[in-house]
Amino acid sequence: MTERFAPAVLLDLMRRALEKSGATPAMAAATASALVAAELDGIPSHGASRIPQYCGHVANGRATGSAVPRVARERGGACLVDAGGGLAFEACALAVREAIARARTNGVAFASVANSNHFGVAAYHAEPIAEAGLVGLAFGNSPAAMPMWGGKRALFGTNPIAAAFPRRGAPPMVIDLSLSEVARGKLMVAAREGRPIPAGWALDKDGNPTTDPKAGLEGMMLPAGGAKGAMLALTVELLACALSGSAFGFESDSFFVEAGKPTRIGQAFLAIDPDALAGRDAYLERVETLVAAMLMDDGVRLPGDRRRANRERIAKEGIALAPDLAAKIRSLAGEG
Image (cartoon, helix red, strand yellow):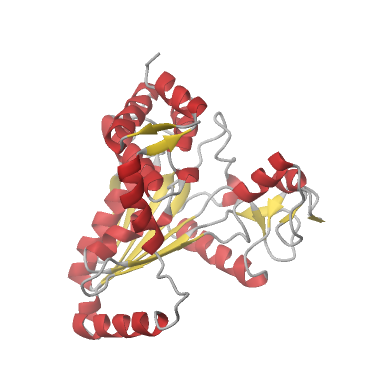
C-alpha cells in the first residue's frame, strides 16, 4: 500500500522537515520544490526519498543549512556562484537566472556553481533556460562511482547531462541522461530479488567484472558506451569542477553517508541565445524540421514527452509514497 499526497501538501511537509533540520526557509523551499517536481515527472529516486538524506546532511554538517548563495566572481557572460556548502537547489536557481540574463546580453553565458551538493534531476535546471527561449545545458558531478576506462578504482561520478531546446508552439525538447551503463537502482532491485545482473553493468570492489548485484553495489558502475562514456564523464568532471574549483568525485564521500565530509561538488549551466547565431526563426525552423523527420517513424517519442504526461497524471492522482517514507518525512517535520 502507498499513501498519496497532493503536491502542495507534500511540498509543505518536506519544506518543514528541511527547516527543522537547519536549512534556511529559502533553501528548504527551493529543495522541496525540486523534489516535488521530480515526483511529478515520475522520477521518485530523485524525489521525496531524498529528504532523509538531505536532512541528515544539514543536521550533520555535510551541508551548511545557513548558507546563502552568492555570485562570487563574474566577467561578461561568465560567473561563479558559491553555494556556500549548502544544499544545491537555491544556488543552482541563482546560476540559471544569471545564465539566462547574461546570455540575453552576451549571446552565450556559462554559470558555474561551487561548494555544492546533490542537484537532483539535471533537466530540472536546464528546462527553465529553454522556457526562456534559450538553449540550455546542465552538467553536474557526483561522488565517485565509475572508473576511468581501463582503471580499477572509482574516480568519476555518474555525472548527469541535460539539454533543453525551445520549440515553436510546443514545449521544449528535454534530454537527460547519466553516464553509467545503468542506474544503481537496477542493481538494488536485482540484489533485493536475488537475481544476477548482466555482464557489463558493474565491477566489484577489486575492479573485476561481476554479475553479482551486491558485489556491484560494493564496487562501481561501468560507464555507458565503454570508453566513450568514460570520456564523457571525464568531460563533465572537468566542466563542473575544474572551472569552479569544486571537489572531484573521488574527493567526496557518498551522498548516502549522512555524517561524511562536505561534498563540495560542482555544477555548470550553459545558455545560448539563438538570436546571436543564425537567428530565432532559422533556429526554430531547423528544430521543427528535425522533429518532423524523427516523428515520421511511428515508434519515436520525443525526449521529455513522457515526463510531461507524468506531470498531468500524477498531479491528478497524487504523489504516492511508501508508508515508511511518509512516516519518516512526517517525523522530520515534527509531526506524529
